[in-house]
Image 1 (cartoon, rainbow, N blue to C red):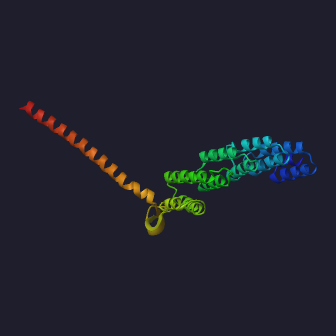
Image 2: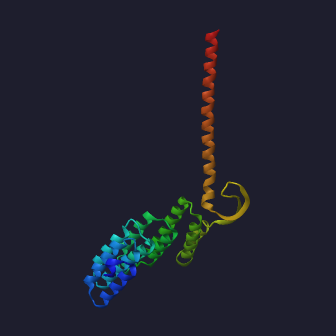
Image 3: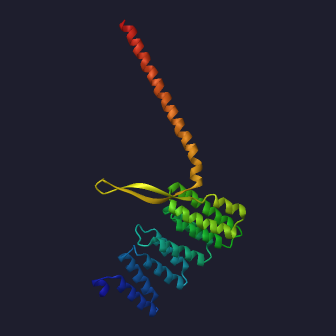
Length: 253
């Protein structure tokens, strides 16, 4: 009656807990389905439903629930849901399925915590090449965050990568990461009010990455080449205009 008159999360959870205590698992399934119709964005509900099926030994049904969950158009805590799904596959020893989930997640977000978790996952795998697999994840992550210009996240990644190489790499691999570490510099920028008036200057810290600095000379040469090409085009157009003027003067005379 309560669910019919004023459905609330607390009511659903209380009802489900009651049916679990009574071992009425089929009724629990029905309640979870209705609960998810009521709030399909609720990640905790999806996770508890999948956990129930896992406890009952039906891993295929649990996997299907997780799959339905991650494909919802809107979720309130997707990071928790994806972590639960990955942990579920890891607990079953399904390393390849867990790896596929990480790759799918990276198609949706390039957050540094996802990359770091992926690297830790590879390192913890039983594969003999686990260190090399984890290193490849760090390399991909650095390139990805560099392309997205995510400086703060990139610093966190490089620090984690340096720690990884300290523990599992050699002198060469460690020096390779150390060379990528940025310099922290203090800069100033103008501050403007909402109405556009200037309010002075503020100081902030920025990061200068050696990899980015190394590409700047090439970019400068490219800009100079473009400027030279543009100047050549302008000169040719100007010469063409002068020729037209000379021909017009000759015809008039």
